[in-house]
Image 1 (cartoon, rainbow over the protein chains, first blue to last red):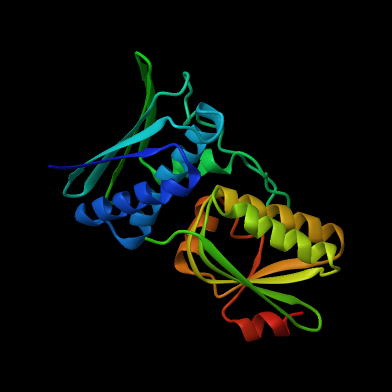
Image 2 (tube, rainbow over the protein chains, first blue to last red; image 1 turned 30 degrees about the vertical axis):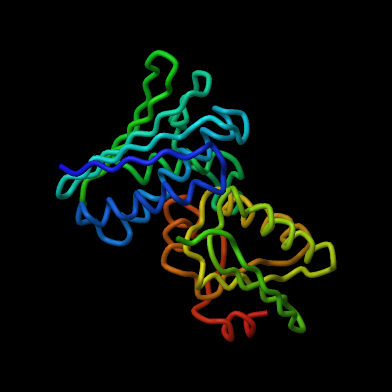
Length: 136
Length: 114
């Protein structure tokens, strides 16, 4: 197993750095380009949610990413010190009108569709989001 | 590492072509939104978004696209996508939005459709 770690301040223009590390790790796991992008999207959406709703805006708090890579699987953990906030609260998968899709909630839909498993825990003063995906 | 977004606009008779290059996420979506809303306020009802150089399209970017499409449709117009990158297509598909935009294989076909 290979482990990658990166911490960034909770600023939107830094999220791309985490996505780049995810891309690298997903390639190591042997994912195809579509799955690599799915992993990047999921992490990007989670981070944007944490910044917007957890930290209530850009702040000096951190986003701490840990990625564990095994052949065919990737397990990612994002930790933050915002007040208790679950960035993955699972929406009901909507059956919306194709002619009138929703404007909000797309990030959560993307996160859950992109990954095989998404779950959140609160440990002490830290929010911990786990996401996992295996090769199809 | 790709950060930031570059937007170029070229007007045609019945449509404005907007070429978007780079990363569209929470850090950059507002720039795209201001640009597209500005075009609508200037009287443009039909927009083609050339997205073949879009390397990342998050829900923030999708939100802008959906909002502008809804706005122009109320005005009798339309937003379509020209030669979207594979990542653009994947973002649309994973969000369930692939049917909300006409998609053209190239710029010329897109322009001719208006």
